[in-house]
Length: 287
Image 1 (tube, rainbow, N blue to C red):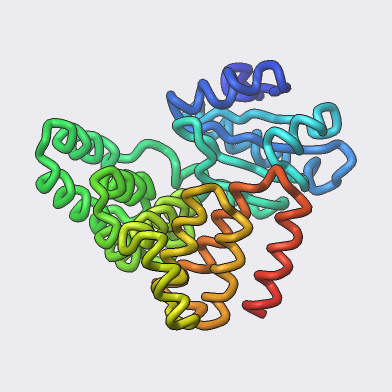
Image 2 (image 1 turned 180 degrees about the vertical axis):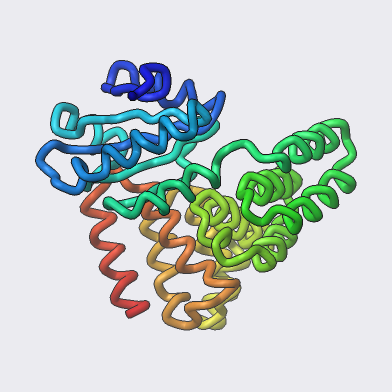
């Protein structure tokens, strides 16, 4: 029997409270579904089974995209169903597209349930807030190695390093993470933004421009120029420069140009024509 306290139906009016608000207290899984899509109907019983099995350790929210198509597409970026998102701390922390196996959704849930390491993580954050940043970073690094299945440790470590402006250290930490965490959306976003801040700090825009005048293939100057363009919200200029860098060296700075392109495309997601144009340009370059 389905418990009314752990499975709800969302709509545009209650989405903020039901999903975003509750995500501050624990994981919230949102099932974007349509009665017109057979896979959605097959998936639903599996998700309800898991919700009851975990007995309230996460909430299951169903959102009917047939009824609220405009909100789902324009406000949430849902373009296909079934799409299942996990929200935590007011952010999307995981996504599964399509009706995958029950085991896949079980793993998704378990990744985001509170763990013993979360208590130690909170202690490290308190240490940082008390001014013991070196001690906090050391504890977080050790904790990351002890529990690599908890992405919240790496996310917190990278956020605090970003706050301290330790951009080079962020790249080092990112390179040391297991592959599954290097594919984590929030981690990629933090590292990418840090890379741009680092690029902008290495030389001012005038110096970058002067160096490119002297040598059009100066890839470091080009990246710095792209970083300054991004900071000035000149997205097309930044992407044009990044595309040229990718042609020179796709893996420059641990794939930073490609990651940067993806990050900018996410930023301009409300301009579908621009996204389509530059996504096609990126595909043409990387093949």
